[in-house]
Image (cartoon, rainbow, N blue to C red; front, side, top):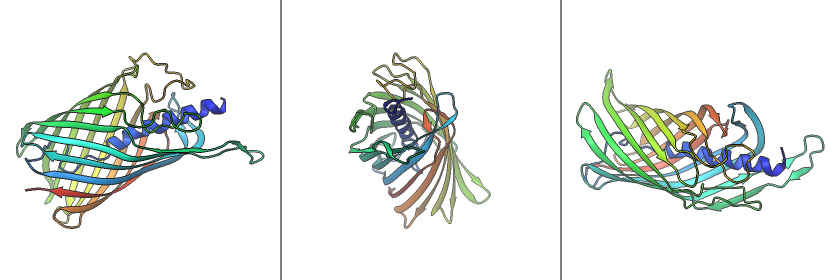
Length: 298
């Protein structure tokens, strides 16, 4: 495989990991629950991944030039009414990097590294609370993916902080509050459809989340499973050596764990870890996130 083809493959791998980021910011009051009118949840986060290996289109693990992506982002939920919640995910600083490619025999530089800094693709959405009581919470959401990132950055145009396509995600969440002994807990499952444009294949998305509230709900421990399955109905090429597009027909099943600690009734900090059980055209390395949040309830 030529150097330019390797770089295109890595750029596609890098962007696929952005999907993990999009699902790692659900707030404690998110999922099937909508905020009450005037309530809000705001989070400022730093997320990153650096990897020297990836899953191929056949699900195998191959080495690659060490590459990374670093996102500084804002996530917010605001209760427009007791039924409607506005949602925004804004990666206002995104950095994609690729290290020098070195010869294994001489150590000489075969291909110089590169990096870009830019705004990232942004999500704006609205969630409607269909049902919310003490037993179950059911909500539907519509999210618009705005292509505000750089889809062809770097010296060779192969570094991305966005895919250049406008997409719409329709999702249904179901949440269930319960207790484990005297410990408050919740579970949430979701199923969604991602309608993609510009020849990208549409996607089916699914996930589950489980949380425990310890120390009088000051410490929340959260575990998540997230999946993306391509419908393979796009018009873009699917060959991994293609130099025209990236992240088409990519798939993965990932897991993540998060700890969120309330310093007081509103302010808190969080840290998370995510990785993939399996994948196609995706880094075979974990990602990390740290953040600070403000949970405003009436």
